Image (cartoon, rainbow, N blue to C red):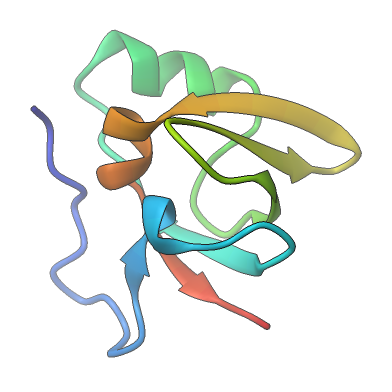
Length: 85
């Protein structure tokens, strides 16, 4: 499984999968060497983007710029975010 490239991550950085429904965050890092992550990037889920978790679970739903994207738990484990709320 890919790991996020987050060697300079802030102290409060966590995996996306750790957030709860309704919680907002800023994306810090996600792998760019695996097809599923390239698809997420193409949909706008990339570094610096502000997101909100709509649904938490084995298949998460995150909202960004008015669009909802489904993210599998395995992928969410590899995405580093900084909680904003």
